[in-house]
Image 1: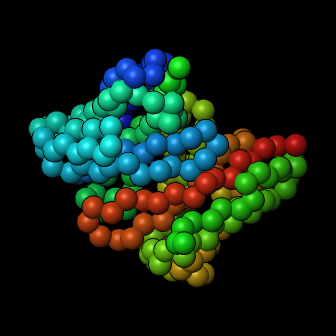
Image 2 (image 1 turned 90 degrees about the vertical axis):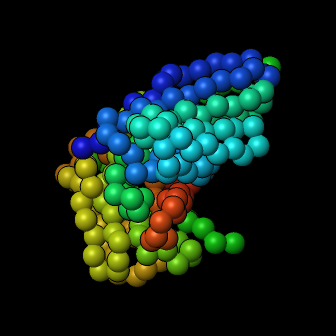
Image 3 (image 1 turned 180 degrees about the vertical axis):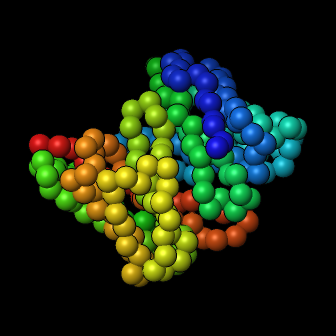
Length: 112
Length: 113
C-alpha cells in the first residue's frame, strides 16, 4: 500500500516569513493533492499535481512535484495569519482520485 | 450553493449504542467517501461508494456500516462493535474523471459519554 510521509509535523513561523512543507511517497504518484484544514473543519482543496516537474501557484502558495513523482513540496511566501492550519497531502494511486491515501498533516502556526 | 452537508456537527454516544452520521451532497457527484481523522494520524478511509446501491470497505471498516440508496446521501453508522469511536469523521464526494479533487464536508465530531 502507498504511504505518505509529511515533514515537518508542525511548524511555527513569524508573519512575513517563507516556509516549505514536504510530502514524500513510498511509490510513484499518479497525482498529488494538497488540502488545507482549519481545526475542527473540513478540508479545502488547494492544488493538484500530476506531471513530473509540474509546478502550480495560487496567490502566495506554490506546489511542486519532483521529476520522479515521489516527492512534493508546498511553499508559502510571506506567510500571514490566514495561512495557519493543517496542510495535508493526498496521493492518488489509481489515476482517478477514486481512492486517496493521506499524509499525517503539517500543523502551521503563524505568529505576529 | 452546491456542497456537502454533514450533520450533526457534534454527537455523543453511550456504551452499546449505534449512532448514524448524515452526509448529503447536491453536487451530483457519483462517488462518496467516509474518513476518520484522529490526532497525528491523518485521514483513514472507512467506506466508499462509487455508485448507488454499491459500496466498498476501506482500510478501517470494522465496526462501521453504510448504505447508498440515493446518489445524494451516504450515511455512516457507528455500531457498538466499534470500541474506540471517538474521532472526527469527514465525508467527501468526487466527480468521476481525470484531475478531479475530492470535496469535503465540515465534519462530525463523535465522543463517548
